[in-house]
Length: 437
Image (cartoon, rainbow, N blue to C red; front, top):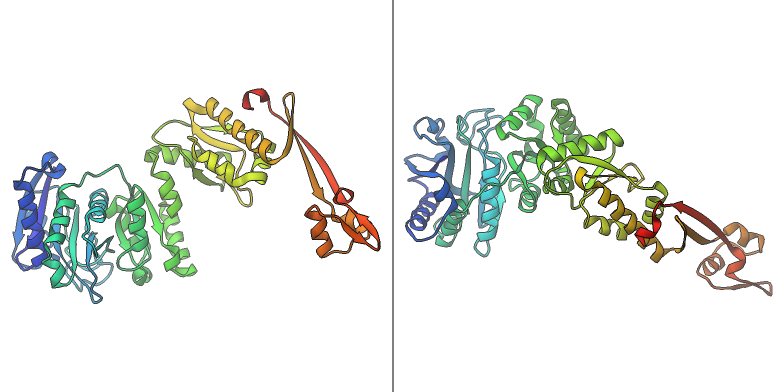
């Protein structure tokens, strides 16, 4: 593809980045951007924020504007963002217009900025703001902030140049974002730890301006397959209003943990996993462990009592064990782990065996359990408050002592823990149990 690198003669930071780009390209290094694409340098006389329709004079498939970033609270920063105006056009562009975003390219550059930022600089997204907006070609701004000192800093210029030339976009999960500050802290964190790639982001201060029409424009301009809401930055009413608009528009809403978990799966496969979960347990929440790549998702059912007893006795140990398996588990309401799991078709038999083995081993460690043929027999001894009361033990500290295994004295009588205990036995049938020991 043809990629235009655009700077302004008025902009020290843009010239700084451009000069380092040219120096690096003239050297002996191998740079993915130059090796795989045709690069076009283009310089303009005016400010970049006023370059509406520049793609009519620059023949390119992607526009990368290299520029300065200024802030009322100056902090050394390397940033990336797409342009647009939700309402008025105070800083270039056209009112109520959003430029086409390039989420995967912004994601790739952001990852590189974070890895190469000089000491004292932070790398982040910026939310959607300023022009140009009248563009038909996808674009992004890459900037050095936030004062003249940083704009001319050769270390910053080189870091940005290397980040651009090293960009190799992945298969990303393209998103639109809502809430947060100008520097989109949560969205930046998500992008740096997952395949979640943001296009247009509306900060908290602009949430009130979001309408169903603008939301749809955000989604289309970002080619977004889903959305994320930074709930901690919004009131319950604000978050609820955005969520209802997303639902009405048919746009999938993902939490941060869902984006992180989905990042290991091919997107179409992730959607099939979600659909299958909705069929077998409507309203359930998916928790993806080491299930990755692509495949045909299928259901694996485990003996319900076995799952229930394992989670009851060692939930953390069980979830840690699942983390090593190519599986997704489901939760619903107060039930933290349902007995139906999702995996890929070609590994379903092995997975059923692995989950059963994990449960059996954890129960044999945690419980007074014995094997009886194809049955796992669980013997549970519990303190029985009713028995304690019948023995004349008052509620309070003496209850706690008996429950902790210590004998107590009541009016000269010695009450032992055995006297106030109830024993229950549960038999769980597991075909072929000997294979799981």
